[in-house]
Length: 76
Image (cartoon, rainbow, N blue to C red; front, top):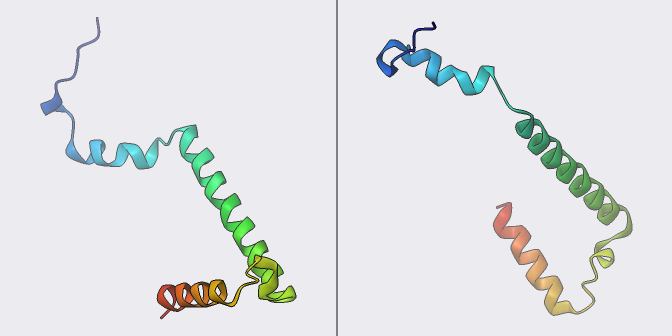
């Protein structure tokens, strides 16, 4: 029979390193989804740089002001 390990028998380093060494497939799906969102955002930004701010649908000057103000607070 196998002897069961007690929590005191497990090394603390092994417990800390387990998530790094043995990742599940859901982690890679999450990374893929985040990478896809980043690529989409970069593509949208490139379209906006080429065609201008009009592609955002901000036709009213008030909305442009809100857009530029948010950009200023995000990138000071």
